[in-house]
Length: 220
Image 1: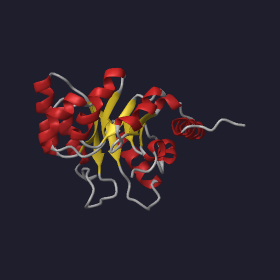
Image 2 (image 1 turned 180 degrees about the horizontal axis):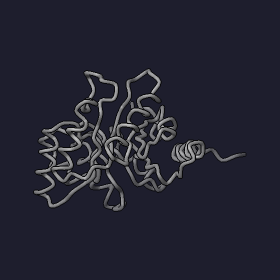
Image 3 (image 1 turned 90 degrees about the vertical axis):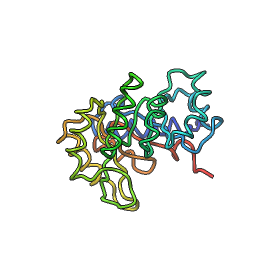
Image 4 (image 1 turned 180 degrees about the vertical axis):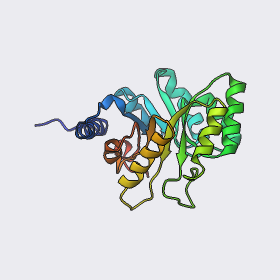
């Protein structure tokens, strides 16, 4: 009887398949396992299976569970994939290795100040409100060049752009648009694609995919 793949193996197989179609190297794609609202017991099996990049939505939640997990898995990288309040910038710089949600001038200032105070710089993705949705975070497409310039002037290392396409609409055009915006602004990274659409995102240039449900199952 054939051994059933675990969720991590399945996601890696799908990444490899999408990369083959797109004629890309799977090593170009970083899998960020989104562990928000999952406890240490749910995260540990992925760590033991070799997954080392994880995404959290909130600074406080990450502070509560990751220091203990990282005692045994010190090479783990933590990415902040949710909105960041300016007053949490210092805490975020202490804990995370990458921020995916830089989306406004006030946060550029707060992060630059935190970087200087902590003598530490971490890569940031600028989040773009790719579908112009009022309820979503992210800078407008029109404001993107100004925000990129401000981040560069503040010596914030830019990894690339991030987006969350509108729900229940074909995501491919939004991924293609983010890819073009990244290219136009001279940025190499594209953080795009989640559990339902990461293969499409890979075929359209994603360098970082943020996958939660496909790895952890539905949250209670």
